[in-house]
Amino acid sequence: MDLVVTNPTALTYARAAGQTPGVTAARAEDVKIASYASRSLPKVTPVGIETFGRPGPSAEKLISELAMRRAGQSGKPYSKAKAEMRATFSAVLVTANARMLYAAQKRAVELMWARAEPLQLMMA
Image (cartoon, rainbow, N blue to C red):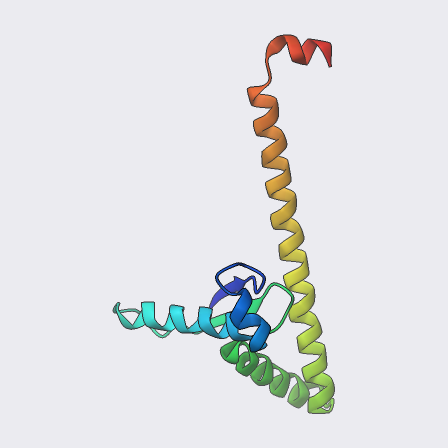
């Protein structure tokens, strides 16, 4: 599995995303599929998810397959298992986004301090 997260508000996607929900995740999956086709790699499934949580076709298929398995193991109705699986994907995405933003913020502060003049540091 190769996870790709796309931002539907990015300039390259904004127009298409406004017209077709989920198009950015689907396009990202297509790009990955094309890149695998040009190489001799074992079967890799691209899983595209938009930053706001909408899954692409491969991601939707994966969610459905996992929900089917969970329903069979737990005895829960498929619809409930699928809702739980969507919630899990959403929580993982939100957590990953938060970690990414935190790391970027931390790096920006480190760079700011690394560039500060010694006198400015003493005055602070």
